Image 1: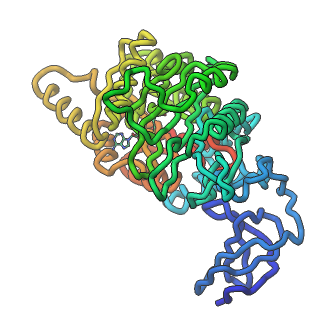
Image 2 (image 1 turned 90 degrees about the horizontal axis):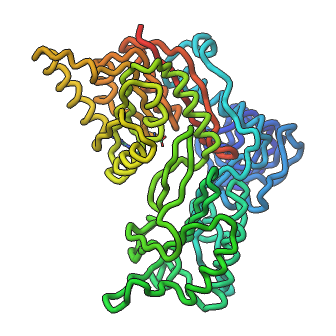
Image 3 (image 1 turned 90 degrees about the vertical axis):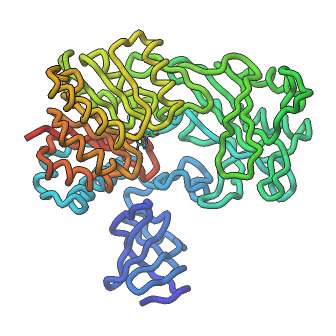
Length: 477
Ligand code: SAH
């Protein structure tokens, strides 16, 4: 065991789950944030355990060939990106290996077999300015000046900045307008401790294909009964709107009412104070409307590539019945609708299902149906119903899935859901995953249940972060 305060020189030989550098001294492991694989560093032990320790990067003694200058000056404090000081090529390799190793180790699959079905990760040509959504907290600095920026990793203190290189250029202009308007009009930012002050967060969204921009102010104020519908939520509101309209593409300005003492950013009550309630964006040739509250994938460029890969794996000829579980606002479901016979989507959030139905209508898609509920409950109900109709004479074939697509949250699929999928016995399963550890666990179950892994394709939706998406094609043995 090593002791707190000890300083070691160590070579970084691996990358940890949170993106930290890993080095070893006589079999004792050091986890060192911001150290890059290939670096030789001096690191000071901060917290020591029997077999490993967390250490602070004191000095880079020898720079790794993979080390680059972070584009954001605050990348280290911000914590939103973990890999800004490592080359993008090396990051992609890390992500490819992470998916592969999880499937081998946690899924218990043969390494040679996994290597034979792994496809190269889909990276970004230009991995910057990819996020279509940003949420800036608003607060005060030590001198009492209004600041906007990002929370320092795992804290609630704001690092002042109006720029974020993974966000769109317009963010900077908008946040500078908001900050100076608040200073000039003496508008108080929300204070988490006292629960006083007005402006909590500023949400900015952009439709990449439409160019439309939305700004939503999350405020700690609810208009009283006496206020009329045109009430000013923000002092000098008309003036603020005028300034924001100078930003190219500005289409929707709104406020979200959040008077609760909570970490939840958005309040559910939204009032549009300028323009439309929603902005538009297109994805895989379909048009979607996005409100301040609706879910929409944050990297539209990679989402298109991810969906195209999922569609290719679904291998549709126009006749198939497709079930899309965990469908969100139906983006995958609808992208597959044109190429399939019938598509069904299941999603647990009622508002998302409402959006999905509207999206189907807006795009003139008549062969899609959406059901609200948990996949592990709705799917078994349909399976039972189909069995009954089969017994009753009707062959129930329109409900039999040829393809099942799943895109679950990080915790993966519920066991009951996987079990039902196996009983329904589709020809192909396309598994879209944002967590390769739970993916590996679920692949084991599907594989034991009679499915072969035909292809594994990682996709980088979040450059400079540790997160990686994966698309897996399984076919029935
Ligand atoms: N496929 C969509 C959304 C994927 S995110 C897209 O690409 O945009 C995962 C979705 O699963 C979320 O919308 C979440 O609300 C939903 N979800 C979470 N648990 C669920 C469950 N048990 N049953 C159905 N949907 C669930």
